[in-house]
Image (cartoon, rainbow, N blue to C red; front, top):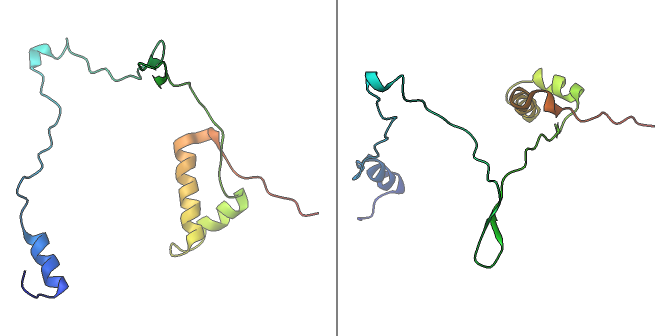
Amino acid sequence: MPDLPEKEILNQLFNENEKFPVVEEGEPEVAKELEPLVQKIEKEIYLSKPVIDDYGQPLVSSPSPQNPQITLPVTKSVYNFGLTKKISESVRWLAEWCLRIIKIFGTRAEFREEKVKS
C-alpha cells in the first residue's frame, strides 16, 4: 500500500465489501399439513454411563444437578447505596450487576453478610 495515514488505511479496509457474505439459516419451514405431527423438542441429554476412551479414562460423564447458593460480593446496604449513585460511578454498575444476578437466579442469590465491628 502507498504511504497513507493509518486512519485512511483503516477506512479502506472497512469500506471493502465482504467477499463471502455471511448468510444465516433460520428454522426450516414446516408444511401446514405436517404442523400437527411435528414437535420441536429441546431437552437436556443425560448419559446413563460415562463415555470412556481406549485407555479407560472417562471422556464425558453425565452432569450432576447443581443448585449452588450464590453469594453476591456486596452487602444489602452497599447494594441499596449503589443503586442511588450516578451511572458514571463504578459502585452503581456493581449494584446493577448484582440486580441482574438476582433476577437470573432468584432466591439462590444472597447478599454478603455485614461484618459487625467489635
